[in-house]
Image 1: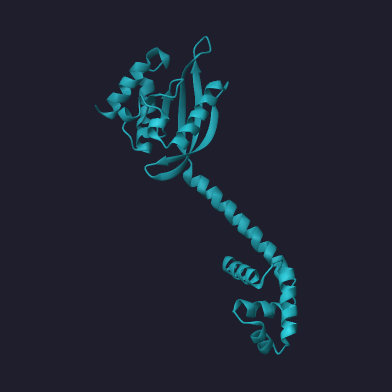
Image 2 (image 1 turned 120 degrees about the vertical axis):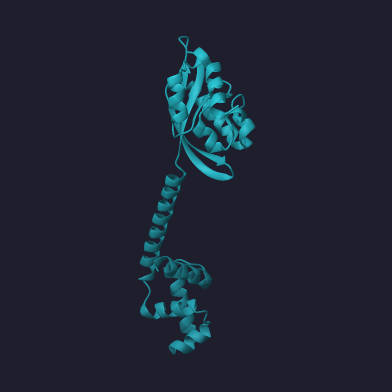
Length: 224
């Protein structure tokens, strides 16, 4: 049985329950976004071609099954909870949901709405999904970049509080020199170098010279 025939049978089985027609079937089948219809128990009654493509499963491997038959249990439990919420809701609900699609982690924005009869009993729950993985990743990357920018600005404000001598000491610390080697390079007493190092750590709000060096090198790399 081909995919369209199986879908047609699924729609025919819905009959008056979902109020489908040949025109509606054509709309669903040609829609570029995944569409699904479930009964009140979460059993798939219908999925369109885009849904099958997205999950990599033929329609006859989906219709008649539940999310627990198709997805890892943690995801299936989440979907079941959202389905239940859609049934209880007076109107459509929109959620951003993680999904494991053919081994890929993706994020889908799903709009769910229930169809009720005249007695307000649920006939079925419909869902339309849009893949927002790329835009979601873009938002996360922007957030990460903004966070790094704030960190760079914060560290800049600390760096500029160093005196020229302290800045030289920090530079030599990043080169791996010991207190004695720094003292020799700057023509200072070792105790004076230690005094400068103490001030550098205090101004940079670090507990150790290792932390100060790591943060300084990280800051330079981010600023490059």
